[in-house]
Image 1 (cartoon, rainbow, N blue to C red):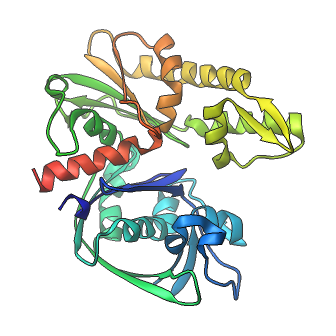
Image 2: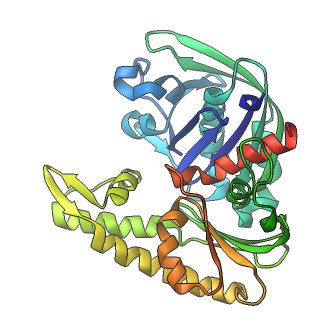
Image 3: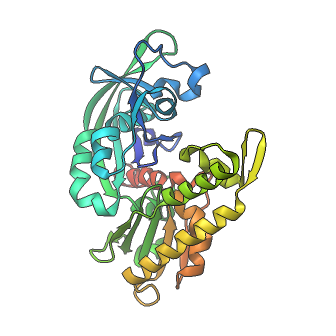
Length: 339
């Protein structure tokens, strides 16, 4: 059954998971709760309360927004090795516990940034494979045990998730066959990094690989600085996503227009990435097109179109572009294990 296939994306900014029927996105933060803190309830943490408050290997963790709110000491990864050591296990397994249908085996497709893929893909697979038991909050004073088996896992270069989201439908069937015969550059702009690779007839090319620390983080920081200067209040970066999409933010009953600062910062970031890509690829002669993807890619696409030559292929419009890779991971899993 397709719900036993899960796409999982443990990013620096957010952890995302989907089994095709439901999806979950939360901040990639984990921490230990205060001593004697009662279990989370729906009233305190919303519908996701039971998988934001977990016990794993005899230790209690809060993950996501609950870790941000309640954990005195919390960790968010800044480097890939930190991600595997600190947040991948509690965040990844909390997401899988939420997605698992019953206690049966599940198959997982996940990904890593291209610059880390060769060094870390086996470590990530080892971390997630096998039987896992997590005790989740029941919203009262007890725990609900969730036991599940990750039977199979496929780790792929992260930008390929969005390529598969373009190529495949929910049945795992190819719906854009022309793209499978083309040589495409892929630009995946995330929270902390931007990754670049070449997809040559659906295979990862050895050349044209790159990664940059110029993700959305720097632009978000400068936008938060501008808000703080105008309002006197510091806004946590992960809360800016909805405000930027809306074009304004309300602080202490005052509405601040973000359109100007966002336009300037996104144009600056697009120009920086464009310079890097023109050095890395011959876009007009070597590539059939460039796919722009990722949560940041959806924001930067109109700006990147102004600075990149050649044919630009945007991702399919979605309610939340941050889920693009994980949607593709799930579709690829359906193709691998069901089609």
